[in-house]
Length: 342
Image (tube, rainbow, N blue to C red; front, side):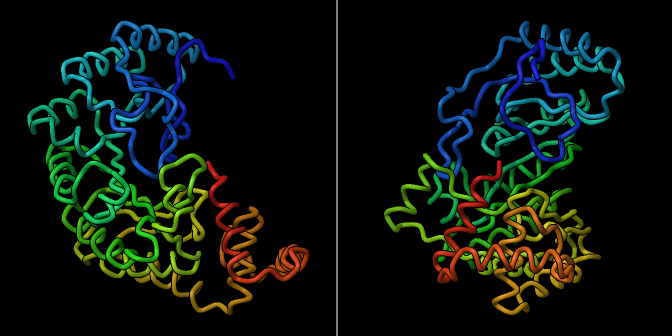
């Protein structure tokens, strides 16, 4: 669909029904090993007059649609000068008076460059939700993927954003530490999340994208990918190390995740989360493989789907058609299917 205003290529899953307004193009860092979203597009700040023209065009196009949410694209609107962001927020709210939540990605490095009074001013002006791709709480993992920030930076940025009154959603990438660092990745990530206590914890599962720096490391053996089962074990360690004082909403919420049903409000539903992860790990090897293939083909949504005999048999037939591949071939297939999910 063609729109009479500029749109960027990505948005968070939670912003599926939101108004999208592009304030920047690309990502100001654009060096993370796992990411290919902006490899061909250099970062630039859009001129405020062009952003206002897009807001005008969006208001005409949507003709009074009562949007509750707006997401500011692309990778990091916080890198803009505070006064310009506030000017955009004021203009946006004038044209879309029903907005209740205005959000943006917020890279930790950009967040800590804003003073607490600046973040409070932005929040009061309407920017009240930030999505932060912390990815890991392990300094060794962060360094290995060229994230450009430390765990201390992530904690400082998150604590300050919350103190400013903003909602905060932290993204974690399961499997990012690979076979060598998975336990450290899980434990240190839990430690950082405990220090921040974000409003939301959103976990994603690693899918190595063609053309990424991580793909090169995978090919030369310096990064060894975990199995689907091992990634669930990693998530089990992560959840078990979250403090009982944490009040975040935790969710596997992207199609790339194996167990989409593993979501709940902490701390009350921590035991439910661990039970779901444990239920998968307790399956027989054959049922694990059946469920993974069914999920990766979009045939299953929940573990209970294994009890649907017609579905189970349909997936089992597809497994037989693969010619009884060995475990390594199966994991390569599972990863290939997973990495295609956008």
